Image (tube, rainbow over all chains, first blue to last red; front, side, top):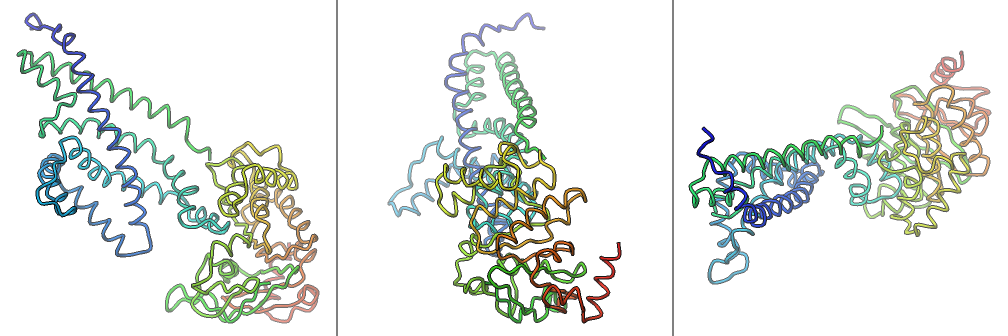
Length: 230
Length: 243
């Protein structure tokens, strides 16, 4: 059955696949993970704060984001962001945002919901005596979080955070609905241009599998190295 | 130095943990607080640096009212050293970093100054060789000595000890008490929640006995151990001194 396959098409498409496609995929993954972690941590702190209203707002946000399919949010946001921009800036016509910025904002907002739950669990895993000791030394709430609680929470949760980022790496392929050329999008374009669907999609699968596996392996190594000695 | 007057605290409308507690700790004084578990002694000492809120009454430290919403609590706490039952060293930081963190972030000392001060205090508690280790690599007694050094690094005007030896293995109790005795003899103002009556006999000026959230006994050491007046204090003492 492999007689009719032409794997040379992959070799010829490699520069395009990686320089265009993979660069986009990795950039989006990295920036979305970073943004999601920062906003997710802020949401987690809101949920754990003593202020009921803040916690409620954060809770509704997380529940809302987690109950929508990602594809829908990407699509929806792409068409909505220009109008939100217009409304915010008071411009006379919808702001043109571009597919990359739109998809990045979407992923950050979506991932923030998931990262916030991970960071919340991480913060709750720190015993109450730790912030008490930090407060007793005169550290403010912000200093206590920054120097004592969050570094420990982050380390405790690092394996889960990276696992979530691997899922994010795979999910970025959903930007195909915006006709963006990510890795899968690039593979798909070549496949259709050259009529080599089987080869290109097989290759794409192998690449996603390899990168995700290496990352998972890396998580285990890292876990052993940076875990807090207890 | 510490003025506690008519402090009441409720955990819920029907559960009162502190009832009309009034006492004081003068400059240079060592006051030991003892009592059965659940008597509110830990809660009381945590009210002194506002780690626990209370609903009525007043506490002031060096003239600053702890329960005044306008009080800069971090600033006040930075001058009140506290040692916890479970040490509460920061496990992700090395020993020397544990000592430097608040010096640099709260007092604004330079890194070099903070390290010098930290090393000097580690030397004092006999642990300067452990400076580059992490807390979990030390024994309980060593960790508690580091915790005392960490509090002293802030140059506190008063030290609070919340059952500093209760979580230690018996053979490690004395190394911690030795450090505390030295501190007391140097004239540090101390409020100590403990069951170590030997420590109280050695260095305390006054002993406070609490039961069910009330201060039952507040007497000079010799009076307390000599002619204990209340039945409850007598019962408590006979229980912990009989072995």
